[in-house]
Length: 150
Image (cartoon, rainbow, N blue to C red):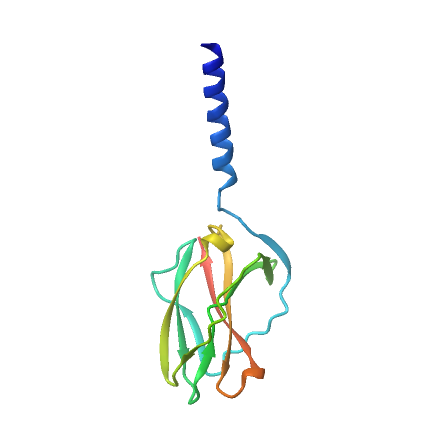
């Protein structure tokens, strides 16, 4: 009987320990200061109102140029520390499929970053996307949308 009680208590502690290991809060490591320059040009990236949560959001990508815009599903998150943007060190693989956005059009892009970055803690963040205009693939540039998790 004592053996069963000891095994049951041990299993309870193991389960509690395993559950704690999967706590998604702060699932990333803050890295070096970012060296990415953000250019808006005629492209805008913003957060759709009332969609921001600690685990994801919906972006609005707007192409206000006369040219076709290209992008893929890749994005990065950075965190602001000491008034500077810092990389978030994670291993991420994205689909390389190129998508386009017609001139003077916008598109909603849903993001769920919980499996990549975990549940974000309080702080200032920005989402970065690399885009380029038709016939200018060598001139890729980053656009960004900043947000705060309270």
